[in-house]
Image (cartoon, rainbow over all chains, first blue to last red):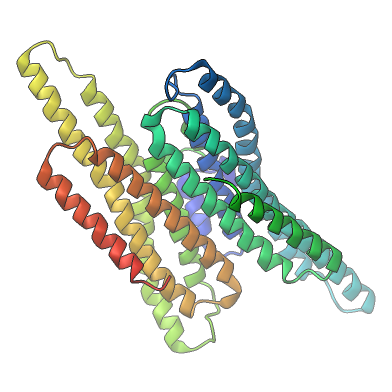
Length: 197
Length: 197
């Protein structure tokens, strides 16, 4: 798995001209440390003013952030696995009409799965950005730059994942799936635009 | 070194409430895969239209990108090491006037070093963003989303590193150093604003 490899090694893998890992995994790899920094700030001994309500808000935020970090971490590998299946489907035999149909179906199924992964990364990054507001409002002000870095990384991860949803979606033929996915992306954008961070 | 540890492990380190690794290392960790994705696109067998000039432009971009990726990768550890020295300086003895002066000097020296690292990350991220324009203009259009993800990651890394420069600079007393660093930040911002990406 990519996440069991060293940082040095994963950077070499991104640099290679192999199709994976690519931008989808890199987007999850931006959002995962962004979420990790929020966990760090939420866990600092000092809160913003020391008020009990701040400690309680941060204690509530932490398990949500840990869950999001773990999902985003898994997505680093899931995106690569999903795209590898797209590449494999394109390599299926296409000598007979039956093979051609089977290959076409396999490609379409793999493309939808490869769209679902970055769509989830968009969703989880958006969720982490919402929790970031709680961390910013209640966390130790001396860690404000860490919250700022976390927000920048999560926005980049969200934006990168969205680009991957869109590029995969461009090859999906299932119109209902395309419409549903576009609707989900728009809802997530609207939710972010309505947020204060 | 952090970069020899697994991705899973480094995410746990960012999540812990220890002062390092923090936002500075995370910023370098965003820009390094951003640069890696550009190296990947520049190295793809196909260029935008197949023109020889495109291949030549990408071949020229690659060694610059590899150098920037390696510097940004090293900065993941350098930022943590520099901030560890700030923390160590604050723990120096301060019982006598001599000790107080030595501690103060050590803190100031460590703070300047801890400002230089993210300032370099700002500079290298800005350089990679400039090269990203060459990759976007000449690289395989089917990898456009990878260039888009790279750009998003590099902007996040640049922005995060800038936040780290600013927070460390707020504690630096050397006015000439502060003025020079602010001037460098402004020049880098002006260069980015004048760029088309």
